[in-house]
Image (cartoon, rainbow, N blue to C red):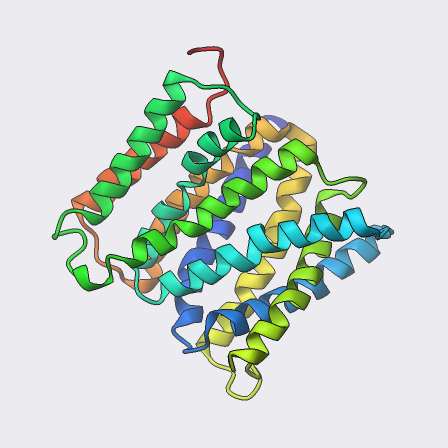
Length: 295
């Protein structure tokens, strides 16, 4: 019995952890620190944690120009660019909204995969994309759901992050990670991303010392970095045990928990439109992620 149900328990725990990162991001940006400084410290913390994991596993990263190119691409489209957009949008948008919008990564991944020759057209998956679009409209169009129309233009900015995640997933799917495992790839990308973002943080005056005034925002940043490192490592472990198809269902858990944690811990207002949007987004994700032979 335990052998049968433990993968579902792990899946729920991973979704709960990743989902918690969404309201944590809202707390992080409330500290007043700006995106490049926050990304600098997030990557620094992840680099230290993942280095420890790699050392404990007895692994070594073999570097070369192809590896540096891979790490740079993953760093840019997987962290620096999407996190810049997410931190910018999170200042103005409710965390529950962010949790639903981030789920559009599946919607972006489908047309990107077709454009890259990674997938073929499917009417069922196109329907999923349309339902996902309806979910976004339900979230932001009604005044009752989105009363502050002055920050409406931050919604497209929030959609930049899942767009880049869609690019990242398709790039890795098509070109692979060379001779590097997933954890080593994430470590290399974290270090290279840290090098990339440091000049930007310094040049824009966004660098800060988190120890100077360690408060709720700094604790949230530390927790967010820990969650990303631990959950990603656990996700890779789960894929190795039960396969990528089963493990991919974590995306549903992330969205559901992201919305619930945001309402529970941040006291964000609820509306029927938000719940309708959540249902539509999950339905759209289930169709877009289907890999059937249906056309």
